Image: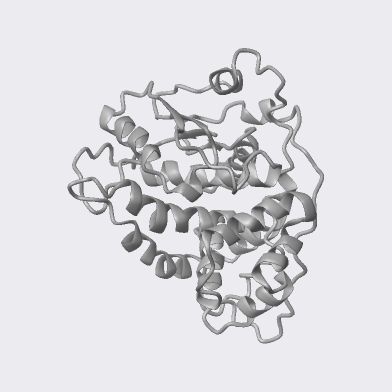
Length: 334
């Protein structure tokens, strides 16, 4: 797993433990869950295979206080078993001083010089889904952070942070009663090209990928409170072979059409009594190939970028960043 991110707020570093300070580890774990999602979709990760030891490297060329790196490495040692599906993690700290990690540098650090035997852009991006932002945030805050911060004198309170998401994202997305909040199949093209653009045109520029996924995750947990990590991972594992929609129905016991119809008809969400929902995302076969290096040109490492597994998430986030620039937006996905 390869994580390239900015582990601190624009206000600077905070080296004092508190219930609101995760030392950037919440961000790291959010992106690590994206690594797991991609690994499950591609078949490189298997929920039945876990690793007692995860090889973690933190590359810090930004002068970020060492406590951020040491706590990050320690966090992976205390990672709950069900999330230990990747045996090597490299965290690249990004910063605002102009330093950029080249694609070749990332590949060399992660896979070895020349990236032997690897086609790092060759990834089935069409089988990823906007739901991923919701489960990455939920599990990083409510399951992973309580475990990895338990030994701190004053642990970060991820559950309290997550509790604010419902109100914050509802406000950002104009809920309840916003007929622009139509989740469709929640595929990346739907979210990027239809949903977000429509919300922007409606004056809701703050309703982006993270909030959209979080609203859907919250609705799932309300509708199906017994949902487990294993079941969510099962959805991702099946998405790579039968498609996200079919895998969702097989695991959750409800079709995506039924689920999306329920969300869009719900009075606390879209509140559209006429919604019939949408069919689930079909199996995709498109791949990112050689266009990615060109896409990366000019994208500053000061942005929160992530490369999962074979860098496909970096491709998706880069697309979002470039789209945000083109539309004058300022929101960068976590």
